[in-house]
Length: 327
Image (tube, rainbow, N blue to C red; front, side):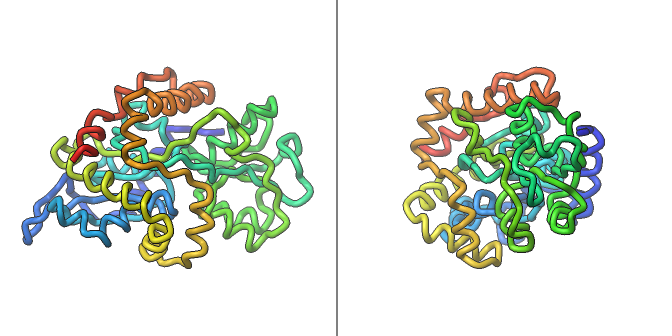
């Protein structure tokens, strides 16, 4: 079963190993730009705006010099933010419980994603078929989120399976070799698993849960200043508008940053709903974004990851996003 504190302790150790920086929060560089440390996950959601910002010169316009660091999941980045090793990061919907618990701030919504799946070995065709079976999942991520959603939908809980917290990359060989019977995991990692285990079964998907929204988000640490956040939000808002106007080119830019084939990124992007900056501003002002976040945190209360479901205004800086988007 999931042990949040132990998982976060492990994440902290991994984050320290992953990063060589010891101080950030906008240190000035010799050329007059402000260096920032920015985390992301190697998928279309996590990479596209950062790649666009670089190619379009948006960082330079704001006097910023980003040091991009790739992570395997959101909780690792939240830990790095708390340690002061990152200024900003990117998380999927499964990690929203962390900023909601006061460990970071959500500064911008990126996309709505439907990339998460529960998969099973050939011959297992339903969640009931995973009863008593060994199921891997990355703790605190959208892999755990979709697993819990699917279990609840089937009238089951984590106690009905042999739940095994695992690093996302470890799930790939473990599933392919048959060491685990199922997994909560996401695309594009799932494409890698499918290539090596083509007979696997997708027994649940976030697309199955109609009426629920799964926002991805950019986050900042509690120590990250408002002035620096404003500059980064300006970059993200402008990059988002470019992505909305140039979807094919955005895929190419993400592929370039990730150093993978464009077709793979295009397949990943099919699981994503992008929105224009104006749309995100409107949805922030009318409470839609708050509704998305509240829906997630209510769910995380049901899984025990949160004790209470806080008002999104306590961790989503929508006012800053709206202000920056107007520039």
